[in-house]
Length: 247
Length: 247
DNA sequence: CGTGTGTTTGAGATTTCTCAATTTTAGTGG
DNA sequence: CCACTAAAATTGAGAAATCTCAAACACACG
Image (cartoon, rainbow over all chains, first blue to last red):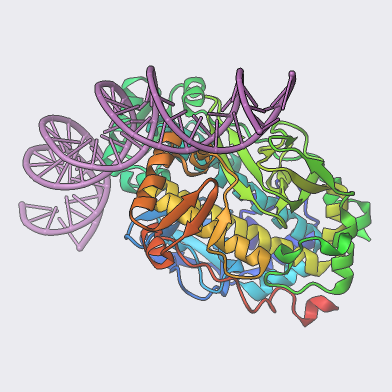
């Protein structure tokens, strides 16, 4: 079972030695199952664990005093959840299962131990977190500066890309197991408005929908309407994990 | 001169050994001066350096295809600039001096070397980047879900807090060397609307202004109108830099 | 089959934006 | 020190995007 862990997120720019892969696999506790809507961790708690998402979708969200909610990320299998809060006394984000899901809980101590023992793992984490930061910057730009249509288009493209990376192939059709209200909370829109934008996307032939299944019909036009920047991961990371570091 | 480097950002949760402080100080090149409006690095370039801001303010921004701009961060002295792009082939953010400024350029190789050599430094970086990530999450929530007044209030409080951390004392009055258009680009608003919000803040007695000098008159009310969460840095990081890691 | 969650649609209200003009401030050269 | 100019701030008026509220509808689930 363990050899099926989705570890692609750890190998994006840095190829981890087999020994590190091994250690990652034993870092987490045995998988736990979550029902849809189950709360894995609530904000305000003391951060003692992070979580490796094995299967299903999980949302990370922060609450505002007014009761509004911002979903900071739709997590897919392979993502490491809850790590931003490791820098805080009290957890900043709530982790909620969007579908039935399966996660492996990782004690912070186990994570810290691996981080200190393995230079490659530490380097991979550094880059991985920076990627999340860039993704947040890009979404902030979208929410702050682009109209609703562009934001929804960008979300669909982002998910297709990430699902493709997960599965290994191009994805142009996928299940979107997320309510329109949740999409709104992710993009800074109302559920009602998300609905209208979806209708617009369908009417203009960019997208087709049936139930929760979404098909991207015109990728090129979607891209142009989304106003999304391409982000190419670093190729050469010798400055970070060079020969020197091997010593 | 070197002993005056603002290194407070490196010591927020983790106290670095003197040897590491020493190495941080020699990691960067000699300071370079920037005039106001000077571009330190433009997006799209190949990321070869990061920068330690010694003095002055610098904005980090991303461009949208439509020509719109999102300022992702107003950087203050002590901040390490341009690090998100280390995970990319081409730089994501443009660094522009908002005031005359002084920075020390750090080759990525020097950074990577220190990251690999010093477990404490690596740990401090990990936490520091996660803090930036939380800050982005919080701003995303503000831009996506709160009205303009709350966003401006939150910005003022954030800056006062960070300037306080820099100087060591409570700050309730400070220079804001930033145009209203730049504030708009930071908060997802128009310059015109920022202006109206400022007027509103002044009229309701929350804030006073003279030229670019801002005075926070009613912190409590500002806080409540800002809807900002308190974020308390971790105290106990033994899981990350425990005895084990010292070995 | 009910019941409840999620979607869809309409109509009007609000916030924020756009455009344009005016005033103020900051910077420059003489 | 002054005059001149460009950048920034300010204000008004109308337009646009998005929201709110409310109702109808569809579908999944027990």
